[in-house]
Length: 117
Image 1: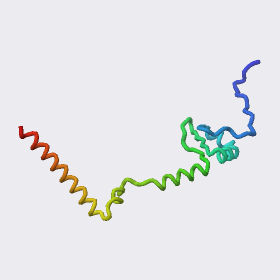
Image 2: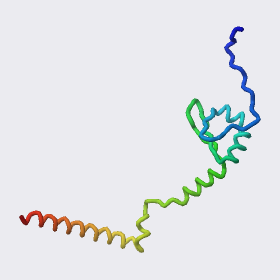
Image 3: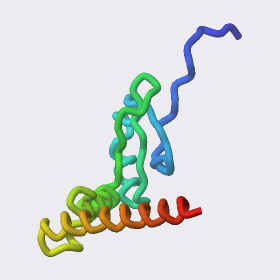
Image 4: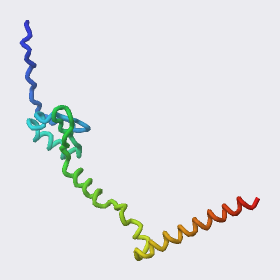
């Protein structure tokens, strides 16, 4: 039997594919979107969507997406986070100034002790 060069046609599965850490081409995601969405909603998984072999997007269960959004909103920003420890910004500047003075005094004391010999 001679080969015609054509690939055998895939049989469509009635079951949704497992959705662990899968990456599927965009054409397959398009053709199987409904089963993928059903499987994702049950398993809270994600599927990478590849375009030309590179993952460009993810199809994620709604519950998982909402949890990630909540985590992102509750993170403490670094900018201005020290202001929580001081009632006023002036208090912060004063504490920094005092810290610098103490460090300078300690280093001068250490210098004096080394030079006494």
